Image (cartoon, rainbow, N blue to C red):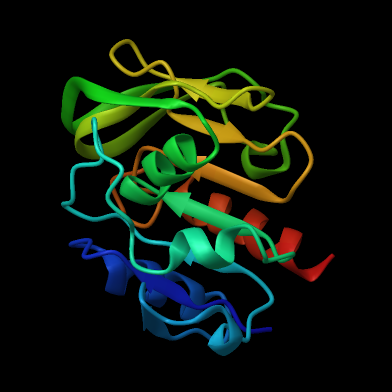
Length: 187
């Protein structure tokens, strides 16, 4: 099983790689300019990053090129989540912001990413922008008091986004979310 982490300039990209490695997954960190043909993967993690997508049509490397072509599961974190929102027709705006511990309310505890986790979790956030309106047809999986779309799911493809950072130790259930994602990649 190979799950690369696409580097969007996030401060915790190496932590995402390490969690995958610790779960026994072959992983590597790749540039977001990597061409689709070079993405040999059973799943993909889109890292966070400091780039602001609010009000912008700026590309995120080559991610838009291959996100439409890939058939493998994708877990997008922070700016990766915002990219999915914008790419698929949602709206990204300046948010709360959220920095530090945030109380997450899980709206869809039946979703595989949140299987067996508590309905309220303390998660770690670090962002100014957020998905204010999800793309048409996408499910909102979780929210917080200041962010309406903390997690979302594509209506038909195995593509999910989370605004918070499951890779950091301060996030309750974060490792389990990564484990659930790995299990979804094995299906």
